[in-house]
Length: 113
Length: 115
Image (cartoon, rainbow over all chains, first blue to last red; front, side):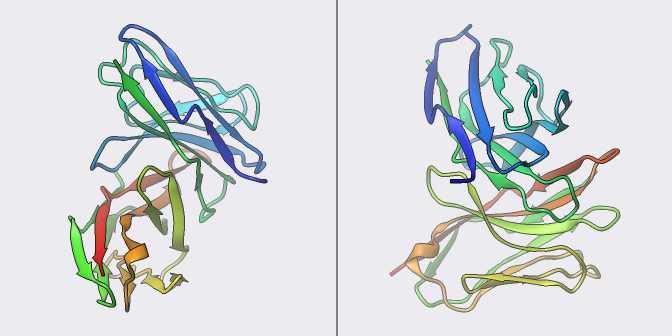
């Protein structure tokens, strides 16, 4: 099946630890994105990438890092520098063209304990 | 910068009532406009989209028309069902430097439909 796979679905992290969220797509999309969603709020862009080996900061990149070594993969690392990391994280992908639909994965819940 | 403003929720309706969720945007150029729906604990699913002025997007009884003169993209449905209960997000997509496209979202509107 084609789609975007995020893992794990639920993750618990101790304060001071880094954690990496996986995002894989088999849609042959060029662009990939990471968004953060807090309860009752909208989505905020963390990082995005239009091509392999290139990515740009979004609106709330501090405390996060990404890599884009393969077209189909865009992992997000939540570092210990992120002050309030508990949130729902959504990965998305799209063809790089105006009007093209951006598709979302099922999301990953991160809780800091 | 670009922004999307949508109707504050929550919205509570009875089954078979009419729905309108207002969405307006601020952007230069010619953005594409989208409505996404999010069911509890899940990711976002595309509901409908419009890529140019006067286009009407429609899906599952929902529709929205891209109005450039009023910079609006209001979501409407004539008769809602309990299964329509979800959070609805309005969004725009536009070039953001070079060949980069970004989605900008509204804050979402929670819809609850009671039987």
